[in-house]
Length: 378
Image 1: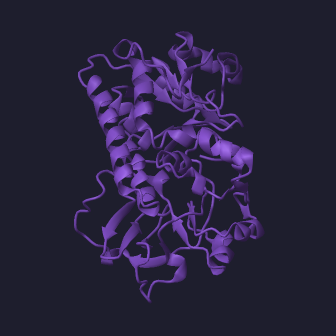
Image 2: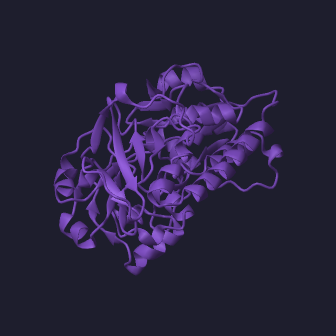
Image 3: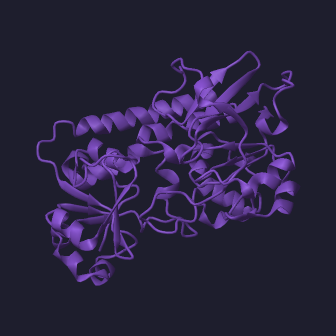
């Protein structure tokens, strides 16, 4: 994920875009979608000469589903579909807008079709990074101010963007210039496998549906196998996730995406019984009362060493996990230009995240596994 302001919030602060054709939720097709197993934010519906992608959760608080149409090559276009609401295959030139999109595109061997990206310095994925460094992918400006002159010169067939709260001001001009825009809402998924399943969204756009399905099945199998590995664990390690920022401690709620990882890893998360999928906010003293005896401390905000953590607040040294030298974070796993690899790759590789957590909690179960994201703070 690009341009992370802090390590506490997993909420994206990024590209805001104009909606495509809205469809009232009451009119949404009700039947079970045969193409999607875990994701709740989008669905795929096949027609004779085109496929409809329905985005049910394009941004937080959305009340309408957005439909986008992907036509087969050479197919007759429907007159009632606006030019900015569809593309016709093959998709050869497009612009994604979040680093979470990049690994999915690379897995579909389509990174060479990317022509532009905002804030390219945050991209870490090796194949795409090489294209950027070579000048094949141009930087189109900051996340809040797209350079429309560069964008139009690139002549993209599509922009794949996300919106936090539905403020589309920055993309009004782009869409009026005739560039189709489709939302990607993967970041709003509530489960690890649901987020990873958005590779099927890219599979439709890139005419790689069979490959996307095959890749997802592989990831799903790995994830479920890892989950099964710890199913009968009797003694669960007590875990705290998150850390303070400006004296406010943010922790994932018990029904959140992050908490699901901890549950599947058979780790006893301090706030596992809280409701909702957002964040909890406490002061440091409140956290200490509830979590002093933790066995493991995961991602204590932006602290990247035991020394900086201990200097942050003297009370941190009193947590059992600190005393036991059991503090882990992904902040030290970075790409060549400083981007955090977790925020880029974890969405499509939840199996790596789960195995990392199992390795931390129960290292004897994965003796030969090398962690992909997390590292112990030294």
